[in-house]
Image (cartoon, rainbow, N blue to C red; front, side):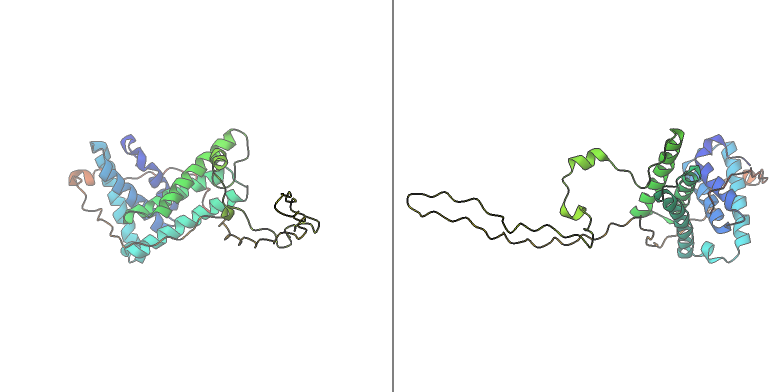
Length: 270
């Protein structure tokens, strides 16, 4: 059953669910669950959308029964960890390919899929800032890579660099990389001299100073800058609301249970 135009905002989650139905049934279940949760909370509620939601809830019940006592469905903590690990794996596949300078259309699609899977963590409640940052970054990278390919240029690897901001900022010592191990700072020449102090009537002439100034202690090397984003985030304790009790007329809930799954391209799956 096709998603009604009024609910097109849940289409990405339905597509991901269909792609993973046989390969990752737990992730597919949560993708469909999150889509139903969004549709019920945001609406609109029309005859067409109610019929679709009835079909979606029936499909969820069928999937849940097929998963049986799978802890990823019956335990919130296990479910959160399962979705998070899967989403981060997809995210890292795209990020590593991008940072290696091998970004392609497939990389962009992988980034976009990763953003969808990370959003599924909202099923369990509010997400932390690290997850939110990864979602925004993945969406931005997908857009940036596709834009570069359309313009016929190689996508820029890694995060964005704002050159104008860099020019305005005054760099600190911590921003400089550590020098190579074989680097030796040049010392003053043995013939270096301080300028002579001119003589005055009340004082004798001061001879030129020939000793070199003391060598300052080397600044401590800064900590290495991580080359990639962190991949761990805390697993909060959350409660999944029951979908089956949502306000959908019982007559409409069983109106149409047929489902048509189109051919979805999923070459982002590693």
